[in-house]
Amino acid sequence: VDLVGGYYDAGDNVKFNFPMAFSTTMLAWSVIEFGKFMGPELNNALDAIGWATDYFLKATNTPGFVFAQVGDPFGDHNCWERPEDMDTPRTSFFVSRENPGSEVSAEIAAALAASSIAFKKFKHNVGYSERLLQRAIM
Image (cartoon, rainbow, N blue to C red; front, side, top):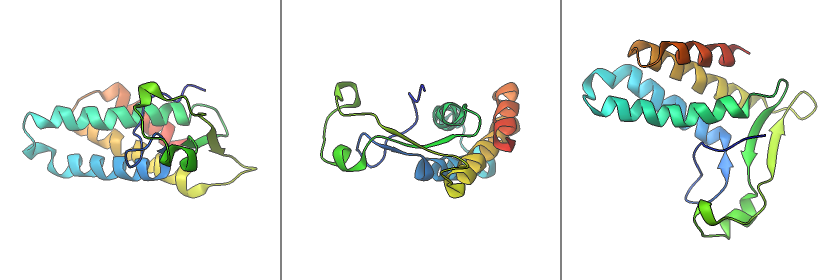
């Protein structure tokens, strides 16, 4: 599964999708509420949201599975190197019916839905907005 993209956690080389989704949700709602005051920085904020949502579309692309984490938190906390130089295992963890994790799934859905509203409100990419909404519903 291609899980390139998204944001790393706390300067480490591990991706925790729950806090990433929460941060994306908050950023999207901030843009929805205050985007009209952001001037030229609005496009940068929408680009930052898009970097996360592109990744969440990948993390939810396999029906019945939601990827919740990429990397080993113990190994990655002990490894201080650029992501480009990583040679540590990129183990992926997912939730499913057999391995439930409604919290991360719900927060990713919230991030996708809120981001959909932000993109639609500012007419940044209405087609992309609809794609995010449909994935949030699934």
